[in-house]
Image (tube, rainbow, N blue to C red; front, side, top):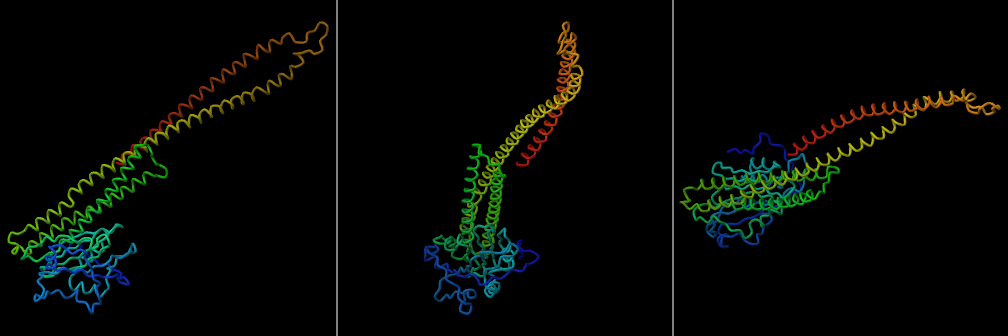
Length: 447
C-alpha cells in the first residue's frame, strides 16, 4: 500500500557522527494489568547495548512457560538532531547498523523516510499485508519536536522508532497513564502513545495561542490609548510578527486536525483487522473516538475565530492611525505652503519696489541736477526772490505721478499674486486628492 507522503525521488540523507544516545522502552500487557492497567511511575528507559550483545531489536517472541503476556510494546528512543544546515535533509539520529536492522524489522519504512524529510510534519495510517503502521511527525517550526513510526507487525508485538525532545519525552507522556484496551481476546494496540502526543501538542498550542492573544490585547490597549509607533514602521513590524505567529499556529492546528483524522482511521483499521474477535465489545474504540474528537474540535474553532477577529481589529486600528497621520501631514504641508507663499509675496513686493526705484531714480536725479539753478537763487538781488515762482509746478506734476505709480503697482501686484495663488491652490488640491486616494487604497489592502 502506497502512502500519500511518498515522493518520486529520494534525496541523499547525510549521516551523523557520533550517533546520539539510544534507549529502549519495553512493557507488556501483563505488567500493565498487574499495575491496575496503568503505565508505571516512574518510567525508566534502558540504554541500548552493542548490537552483538543485544536482541531487543530482533527477538520479539514471548516464552509462555513463564510469561503470561499476550503482547509486548517496544520502542527505540532517540534524541532529535540538534542542528542542521538549511539546505540539508535532517539525518536520522541512528548509526547505520541500527538503521539497517530497523528497516529489516520494518520499524521504519520508505513512507517514514519521506515523512522525516518534511519540515511541515504530518501523519498517516498504513495497512498492507496485515501490518498496521502509524506515522507522525510534528512540524519543525523552531519549537518542540517528536517523530514516531509505530508498527503492529504481529499479534504479540508492537514496536517502532520514537525520536523526541524533552517536551515529548516518553516518561512524561505515559507515566501513570491508564491503558484502556482490556479486551481479553483482541491483540493489544499502542494508540495511547500517539493520542498522548496529540494531547500534549494541543495543550502546547493552546498556551502559545493564549500568549499571542495576551500580546495582541496589550498592543490593542496601547493603540486605543493613542500610543502609536510609526517610526521605522514600528507597529507594522509588530503586526507582521503577530501575523507570522498566527500562520505558524495555523500550521500547528492543521497538523493536529490531520493527526486527529489519522488516529480515527488507525482505530477503524485496527477494529477491522480483528472484527471477528471483538464480539460487540467495541466500547474501547468508541471511547477513543470521543477522546480524540474532544481534544481538538472546539479548541480549533474558538482559537481561529478569536485570533482572526483580534488581528483584524489591530490591523484596522493601525491603518486608521496611519490614515490620521497622513492627514496631519497634509495639514502640515498646507501650512508650510502658506508660509512659503507669504514669504514669496514679500519677496515679490521688495523686487517691485526695487524696480520702481531703479526706474525713477536716474531721471529724478538728472532732472534735479539740471533744474537746480532755476529753482533756487541763493544770491538774490533787491527785487529777486530766492525760490522760483513756478516751483509749484514741480509738486503739481510729481505728486500725481507718484500716486499714479503706486496705484498701478498695487493693481499689478494683486493681479499677479491672485493668479499665482489660484494655480497654487489647484496644484495643492490635486496633491491632496492623490494622497487620499493612495491612503484609501492602502487601507483597503490592509483588510
